[in-house]
Image (cartoon, helix red, strand yellow):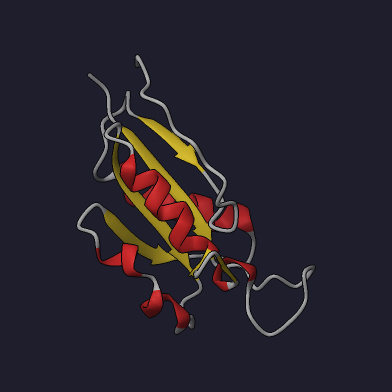
Length: 119
């Protein structure tokens, strides 16, 4: 059975939104948006692992509890979203199988509901 992995681009600065805090670190319901996103992904028994692409100079990520989960890995993200997605895919290329599936989901999109997949 093929595995499902998630790549979470989280290297953005949130320029369009403005402000000093990137949107993935803005709090909603007592936790940063990225924390809600990662929790939702980690709750799914179908997700084998998650790769989060972070800005290499990011110091806020230490506050994300879910990043400590053994199923979560981080990798340096890029200047653009596509660069961060590619960085995540490159890391997975060494770990995943050729027929595995990859879900790409932005860190700042916390309203995620996953159902079991019949993959």
